[in-house]
Image (cartoon, rainbow, N blue to C red):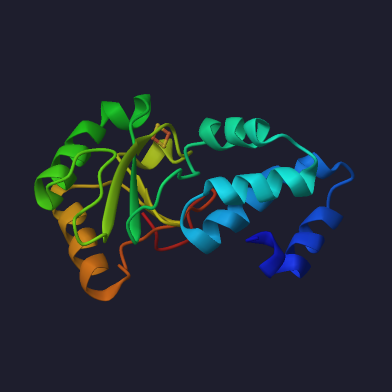
Length: 175
Ligand code: FES
């Protein structure tokens, strides 16, 4: 059982909530952190711990785009396609990424480095077009910037152009 490996962490999470089922999202996060996606065995584990049915857990996993139902690449590129980003070129961002990596939304590169997804608003509407890569935001994207991000991540595993997420106002020196 996946959760058995993390008994202390699971107990700690459960202790934060008066009602067991409220711990569903944190436990799903834990499962995804460990496996890169939320597997069926993990969903069954979580259902058992929280006294839920597996379909109740599945419904939640499929409601939130941040949960992956299958293994993904090392870097998950999530391009916001909601209105404010669409108005400033999110379709172009998807096209640039698709052209450079030869994948379309929902696909993973053959070397398992990148997975591309399109998602709804990520709460960074004033700095679009933007994308989230794993836990980092990359904002005010241009074709050049996207190319640099992908090259840096593939080569170094990190990119200094990441920008947050931050709450407004942006810290001094950020734009
Ligand atoms: S519309 Fe893209 S972050 Fe909100």
